[in-house]
Image (tube, rainbow, N blue to C red):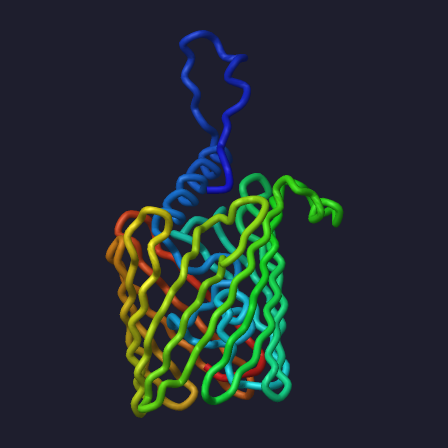
Amino acid sequence: MRRACVITGAAALPPGAAVVPGPVLLARLIAGVALVALAASHARAQDFSPPAPAGTPAGPLALIERGLPDTISGVRIEAATVRWFGLPDLATRALALGGGWRTVRGAVGISQTGDPELGWSAFGLALGVAEREGGAALRVVVRRDRRLGPALGSWRSSSGVGVEVGGGVCVAAGAGLRLWASAPQVWARGESPPLERPLEIGVAYGAHDATLWLSRGAPASDAAADHEAGLALRSGPLALWAAARDRPLRGGIGVAAGARGLVVRAAVESHPALGETVRLALGLGGAP
């Protein structure tokens, strides 16, 4: 976790008086608890989280977040918002611009998470190559505490600023099989990232308009590995998917639709103890 909530002004209270948090402080305390729960749940995505099935090369956001390039060339722009566990004070807003020329793929993006006291901003960059047989990319994300203010000089400060470097690779193995691996945090310096994201490996099998996938997230620190299984169905410009994950056991559903270069995606994931996480994205260019 990146933040600590501190209640100030308690010294001015009479002895034995109870501290009753106001609505604003209470909301920040809830957001702080949710950040702890978010880290404990080993969520795979954070700053540039696209609503898409695991391991899917699905545009500029996925390229920055997972290091997985797709085979679509041309210029694309994508905006997304994520409300973690239904908390308005724990929301992520992201914007990414991507493009491809021949086999080269690249993307750049910005995002903001949380409120000015507990949140952070991020700048992401990814560059890679992609062909029908597979692809690979490197990704770099720089984060800065929002409490440092909007000054450009704060990005050069060693306090409250963190950098992580990683990448991903996907390979078409033939007979409808596709393998992928994503390691977003191979190298990190400065402020610790909000979530520890270890190596994720997965396999997908596609036949006709259906795709089944399985993935495994390597253990983070001394924790056990987590797993996901899902099924995606496609019919023309419409795609639907459902997934189940463990640690803790939970599920999610998603939908994507496209027309004339405009793509809309949405996904909802439940949690047994916390609220629902909702992801929405709007893109120009590409396919659902």
